Image (cartoon, rainbow, N blue to C red; front, side):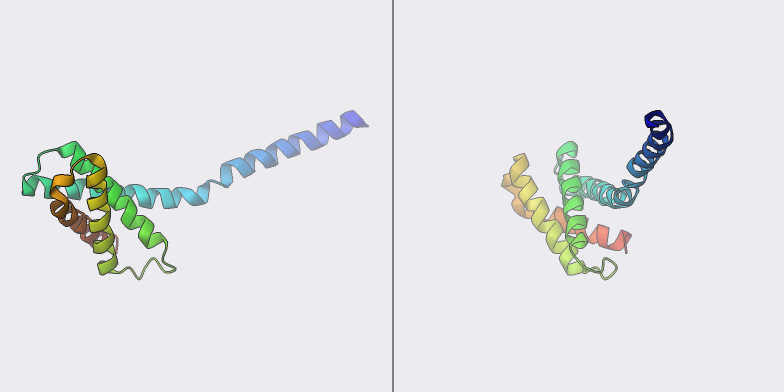
Length: 130
C-alpha cells in the first residue's frame, strides 16, 4: 500500500510544485521590465544631458540616470493609479534622486546640475511612458 501511494502521489506532488515554482514569478516580471525600462530611459537621458552640459563622465552619468529612473518608477509604483502620473512628481523625484545620487557617487560639486539632469530624466520618463 505504501508503494502504491508513493507511485501515485509523488509524481502529482512534483508536478504541482514545479508548476507553482514556474508560474508564481510570472507576475513580478512585468514590474521588473518597467523598472528596467525606466532605468534605461534615465541612463540614456542623463548621458545626453551630461554631454550637453559638458559633464564628461559618461559612466557616472549613466549610473545616476539609471538610479534616477528607478526612483521615478518607484515613486509612481506607490500611487494607486499608475496611469494618472503627475509630471510635477516625476520631475521632482528625478531632481531629488539625481542630486542625492550625485552626492553618493562623489559628484557633489555640481548638485544643481545633477538636479537639472534628474529633472530632465523625470520629464523624459513621464513623456515616454505615458
